[in-house]
Length: 397
Image (cartoon, rainbow, N blue to C red; front, side):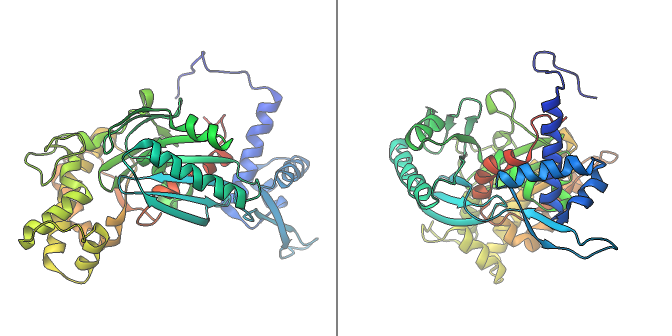
């Protein structure tokens, strides 16, 4: 039972009830489309007149649309509803240590157009480039863009829109949301990349994940980040600092330095950078800038033994960290995201073997699942910072 915080509560006024019912109807359409008004009324036990009024409002807002008639069950043929996907509604900006991607999407999260550029360590140069692309996409969308979501690989305070510390570039206290909003005239939401991807899993992931009330997203990229979903919400902690488990100690003398500079962090053992270094060490090769993680996964899938060995050892260390998360939080599921999911058939056994050995008998385990958001999910995460707010009720318990 959740304790009531009297500092944040408001009485349940009539407009509050209307807002909750509106979100219920909108989410029935989103999750079960095509669906009729009558079906929604039966499922929710709301009055048909209430459903009709809400549907009329949602249609007027351009959120849902009628798509024709369904099969008759004895009376008039019902009119079917679905989420309206025509036109761009959101812009997502995914900033990673190597590449920044800017894209537009419709309400269903389908990417309409995207461009990317090499991320510059100078924040002013990167911000200028992404602002130019946002303006270009906004002009092309004829004013239909409502908001911008930005994901970042570091410590972020979403409440102020500040990038507190981005270790790869040594960015500190950058008022990113304010800079982008002032230049574009659009509201901006920013968050840590793993939190954003966890949000995308919650709203757009596979049913085993989005139906779970508690799960943890482990994002494997240049670093390792975690997004925590508790009771159907992202848990961010004080100033957005929750989930920095990439810096927990899991060993010593890692293949690479963590972004914080240490050689004992989970990230230093389990990141894409660590895997690439392992591969070169196994193969007796000098580090090659021409070989990226995507190419390494291709080699492993083709049967190259050094590439497979590097991925399996990375999976072992991923399993150690995930075991710690399961013991500490006891989530329903742990979702692994990133390019490594393409090699799931090669790494799943090593992951599970490590966890079976690490989690003590009698303690509950959790399902370990690969993300279905694609090998580069941070863009979906950035877009979800905008789209999820359309479907989430601010009054949900």
